[in-house]
Image (cartoon, rainbow, N blue to C red; front, top):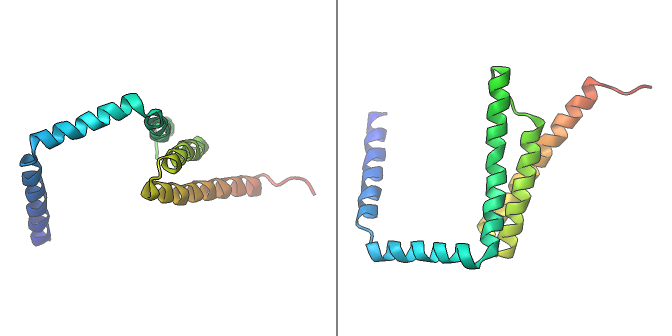
Length: 130
């Protein structure tokens, strides 16, 4: 176990050493490109919006869990996941980002499946008449 930690710490230290040697000019150029995209590519804001909505699901889950005094995943968590994920999927499609696109499709399947399970459980808890 200790040997594993030693290897991990060596890897982390070596990566940080590489980052510290990064060319300052390259870093400035990268930041400038990001800044320009924020001002010229409105789809970047759509992507950020999707990510912000997606992140908000954790805030909702946190609040619900605090009120319950235990870890809870509310129904809203899955609907927010689908909303944010769909917007991010749209961004990935428009920007031709295959990794993000595939990841969002798979994630949306999982969120939808979780909703199906929740609604199935609720239906079995409250069966309708004969």
